[in-house]
Figure 1 (cartoon, rainbow, N blue to C red):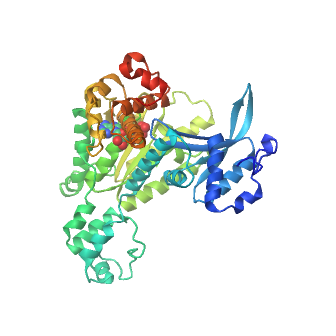
Figure 2 (spheres, rainbow, N blue to C red; figure 1 turned 45 degrees about the vertical axis):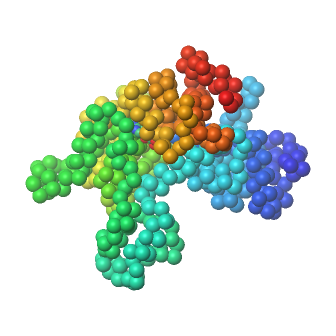
Length: 472
Ligand SMILES: Nc1ncnc2c1ncn2[C@@H]1O[C@H](COP(=O)(O)OP(=O)(O)OP(=O)(O)O)[C@@H](O)[C@H]1O
Ligand SMILES: [Mg+2]
């Protein structure tokens, strides 16, 4: 098909789409893209839980054409120039990356790639998508049926009035999309409806977090502080004497996949607050002055929304810089100082996550109200994680030995989650229950992502299976 459409007919650097391709009907264009991605596309899922889906070509025009064609499916991409190794020389290449989880999902649904990676990517993009939705903290669209029931014949204008909103308030009744949890909670109160209260209650809690006693205790006390701080600081007068704002700044430190993001979600859910998740690496702009503006915007938005601010990849800003080497470093120090100041002025909770505790400046750590350590799970905790992350509804084979998996394989909670999803995808595609054959292959896929060896000593009787990549 590619040959017929003449993509290969030119020298590598000048390949482009034959113009006729843009006139193809949607399903044929999808098929065309599918073939292109099958040859020069990559799909992978990284340890930290981010999925990557990209197409690379030495022809800039071809890359732009791919990007253009993808927009027809509503798939958002980023084009960047890279240098790739070809034989022993370096070459310029152009990469089109599908950027966000909703776009990755659309790609999976409409275009698709063959093979196992796709199945895992899909499961992953879905997870990330749901997480993203959770960050916005919305209740699924099904809630509308119950809103209708609870509302009865009461006019919307009256409901608006009871909520203290203008009669003309737009409830997006026509759209019937997902609804913010906060809104559902408000409706539950004014309509006095238990079903709506049930929808509005958060769907994760402490039970979803497998951690040793120590970090759990700190997390619980942070939550308690945040819940009662108004009473203690304002009404009991404790706030008057402390100069700084009444927020709380805490750092979550631990390896990738140990539950930092999950803990932030639980904390926000327990407090009934929204979680604003900000990737600091993307906020920290290369251009002077931009970072401050970006940060100001984030803090102002959080203040308005009564949200927990969660800065991921905090090491981007708080990395240790013992000696200032150039103007860029000096500037980075200014940024750090600015963020610190801004955090202390903020009167809501601020959480920061880092993978590199050792890399965070001590002066900075001293200014935290709390540091929560997320340890890499020991085999005892890995067993609890396996039990939690293989849902009871999933069909489970008789041979499943979670003790073996927990004992043998040093995976983080995130690794266990990925391995469990991969195993479930394998089982579903093979039409069987999830058994050891699928689980160890899920583990092996997780090992492969991190470039770890699958040793016979660990995999034992499953080693042959993992090496051949085949089915039992
Ligand atoms: N301690 C844990 N208890 C329960 N589930 C966990 C735990 N750690 C990880 N998981 C599972 O792994 C998933 C990924 O973990 P999470 O995103 O919280 O890791 P993280 O520490 O934020 O990693 P990163 O540093 O890469 O951002 C969670 O959504 C959860 O399903
Ligand atoms: Mg995280």
